[in-house]
Length: 351
Image: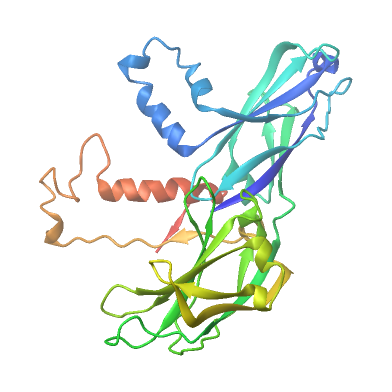
């Protein structure tokens, strides 16, 4: 789950020397890079690299603010953009630099602070980060803002015409799956409908956030696959068609009625899918729910049966290794390390 965010910055009570000019550099480190960093710090291949320089290899700069001159309480107007991903622990690093206001040349680093993006969101989208370890009133304020497309969605509804089961040994129970198909990226699942046992089904309306289309062009292909649901075997394809976001936004009518094609590409007579409703609407985003105080917990079920092996056997899922996690502990840590950031107390409710 990704969503585009903008980050804004302001500072309070910076050292007097920053009056010559101050600028903030912003970098991001994902959880995958952070985990890899921990592993290689003890690797002999990296032993000649100072540990203080290692983070530089794993933080990717995502932007810089403009330079503000003559102000020890600067408010920066230039924002940085970041793709927020709930499933990943994303660490932000903000480096406040003193620069020459005329030449823009670097003079010295004033302070460096880090935080987890998820923690900022769980605190309502704003956090004050202390700049110096001895306390004081100097801090950096980081605020998150949803991109312009956030909070907007399209409401869609489709109807099928003359659908029939692919084989005679299974009753008709049709549903469709909608994908966004970028040119150089994997398919993105947009929606999966309910199954309806009718030849001319009218599926329920559904919402798609417009932000899903922000990384792809509006003319990017959208694929609609219609399947027949089978209880005891693999679902079979009834037919498929393609369209685009631009095409759908042109509204209902003949231009948004699509004949279905088989796997071989042959169009089926009278078998089609039609857009019967489309409306641009306001919609709450996942971040809106987090900022409003939505509580996150998870459920855990551990299989203690003998089928997973003897706990004393190192190959068993239940084996407790003295130096590393077993598969259960690895799975729990992967989940809790992410959702734990959304609780101010660092505690997670598990059921």
